[in-house]
Image (cartoon, rainbow, N blue to C red; front, side, top):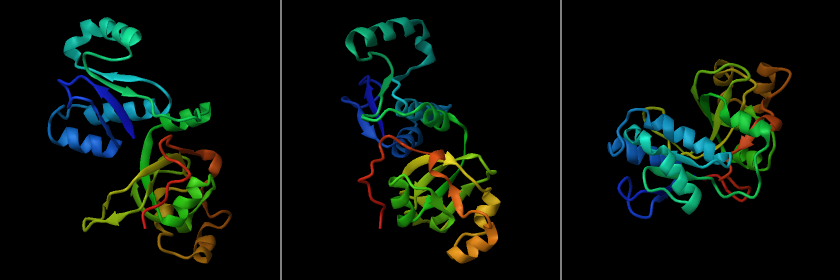
Length: 217
């Protein structure tokens, strides 16, 4: 989740505490911040806060006040112009490799069933049999986002899903789609050497995801 402290002029007094998905939808679609690159800015803020970095988003009209904004933050731990995104509270700092994985360009999404989500939360490698849906076009070793499968809409998209982690995928989107809905034995026949779609050392959970979390039934 993105945690924010904001100027009341920009947002409601007291700020907000929303997931990145709902934040982007509520603020951008309503036009409160416009659509010129705001989704990109929010995505950047999300991953920066995951790595323990504070982020301030402000209008380019106030570039001459950047020094003052930073000075206010240094002295008062608050901002008077723009929106402050604070790091997610986590006792475990991300390792350099994990920060690197989070920073790589995301090529798609993989939606997991409850069993695969459970394995993910226990820091295990992921099997293809737990994959329910795929979005995007990606190649072997690309970085994709792992999501909890929730509800499939009529247009084929997934609603109400949680983003849980990112990682390097062992198989392309074409290969993955070829085994969707198949049993473990069938997948082993198709993939041959390994049915792991992602090895645990190549997976990084988002800091707000805890082992106590449970997949939506």
